[in-house]
Amino acid sequence: MVRLSVNVNKVATLRNSRGGDVPSVVEAVRVCLDAGAAGITVHPRADARHITFRDVRDIAAELARSRDDRVELNIEGDARPDLMALVHEVKPDQCTLVPVLVGERTSQGGWPAETPVVELRRTIEELREARIRVSLFIDADLEAVRWAASLRPDRVELFTEPYARAFNESSDEGERSFQHFAKVATVAHDLGLGVNAGHDLDHRSLVRFRELPYLAEVSIGHALISRALFHGLDRVVREYLDVL
Image (cartoon, rainbow, N blue to C red):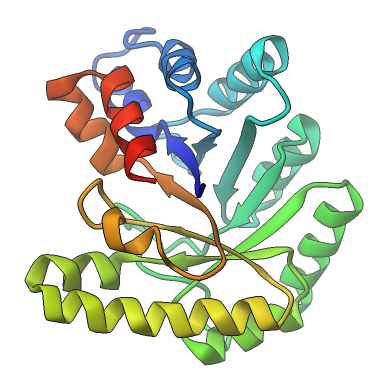
């Protein structure tokens, strides 16, 4: 089964809109794990507009107390020094390196193939030396896959917003997009990379996307948390697991 890592950023967004500790991000993590989620994803941004460094430490401590070996922590974000220091302190199972644009509301795409590689390669090497699995967030593009493979991460995470958009336009558009993603995933696998995916996937678009060749993990936050507002977090996590 494809692993589900629940991104709990939006729980922190709701909490931060009022201040205080309600709703509790750690409590949300407990609900997700009790429902069967195989992982938790967080993206601590520089402006701390949702997940904070304190949240990351609290979640890591909660997982250390309560989890079994199947549950993983994935920290995603850009390779800025303060975040990388936190990653090395917390030692998550996986670090997903994601490009960040100034002022963006959410991720706009993967690392461009023209990204300077010296610092990024050093970051990847340091993470792997610390026995932290490294995933690079990339567009579903063959050039991007080959560029990523040259940096020797463990996995790539495919930016799935184009597939989600195509799926919502029509079944034919969705299928064409899926076939393109399948080709990219196969090339990634052939180059020795594991395959993760995420961004704008939901319980409907996953019905087809779960069949992507070599797909190991999906990271889902916004759609899952939004649905949970009306149906409950435990129930919605279980719905996603049923789909997967």
